[in-house]
Image (cartoon, rainbow, N blue to C red; front, top):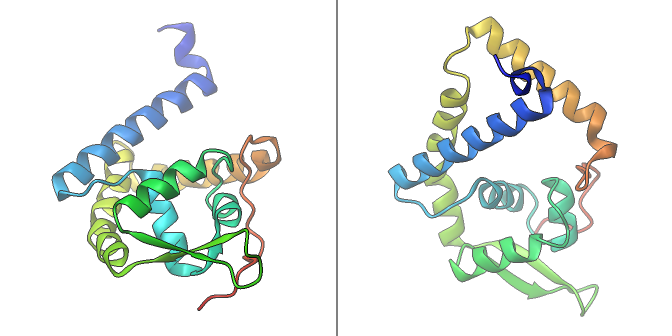
Length: 159
């Protein structure tokens, strides 16, 4: 057993690598060109249409500087639209397109399978404990994150 095998940070990094690999494999299997961050953005825009990029970044705990690239790629795929904000001409509001909604609907069952893939080696009780501990660490450590989750009410009103 290596010293690395006892370091929570190293193990979390490895689980993240595994999670990303499983997500990519399942999306390829589904015939979808979608990353886990793109999926989170689409799901959030479905729940909160008309968000600006900064608010979207906060709601998915993603870096505000790099959310622009995610939004650009989603727009290139015609999964979202960008419109000038009615309240701030400098800002753009994001809307899920019909094509984006279709991709999201197609992805949902595959994303559920990824979740099962991630914890397939755990018993049902271990899965429950694992998720509870991850949630506890995530909530408690949120303020230490480079891209903290900002779960407050969205600034844009749903359309």
